[in-house]
Length: 75
Image (cartoon, rainbow, N blue to C red):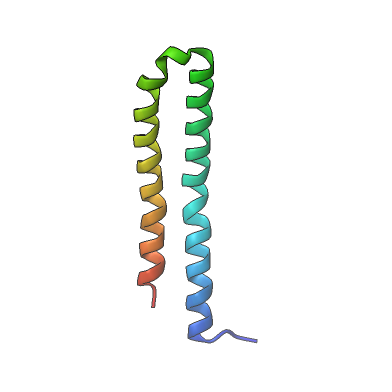
């Protein structure tokens, strides 16, 4: 049974969001795990590690937001 246009749009939005958020999720997970491991080894350096960790997480999250924008622009 062929899908109509509206069903294909919904399916494509789901695929865009699914694939577009896998990379940032994995990246943020590795980033935070690495930062927490570094803080665990050297607690005095937590101030120097925390800000770059937040910046990296924000940049990775921006990729997921780009995927959301693409999903919203599909018609």
